[in-house]
Amino acid sequence: MSRYRLRTYDSNPPGGYPFVEVYKGVTKKYHAQPMPEPQAEAIADFRRANGWPRATKKEALEDLGQYTCQRLGGMLTYCIEVNKQDVPIIPLAPSHPIMGGRCAGCGAVLT
Image (cartoon, rainbow, N blue to C red; front, side):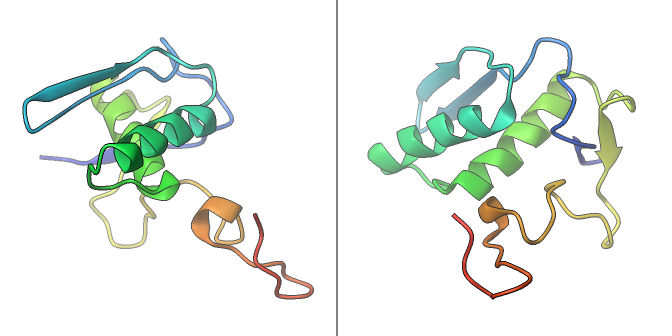
């Protein structure tokens, strides 16, 4: 079975970014958001507050992207296959704050 991730966070896929997850019999539904980062932050906050796994913003963003591609049926307009080793799971530059990036000039951690 193929795994997919979003090509970019710069376009809004059909239906935006809703998210549903089930953990230990508890279902949590998040209403669709027009942007992925605030949704990932809400997911991470809820997971962290309830002791659920994958509670960092980076992990939540990864799960949100995979969920969105699964919801879209791997629609190639918005998704790309990530079964290959050279395709990162999150379409963000390594210097992005979510990725734990550092300033290219001074080396400071970006927040």
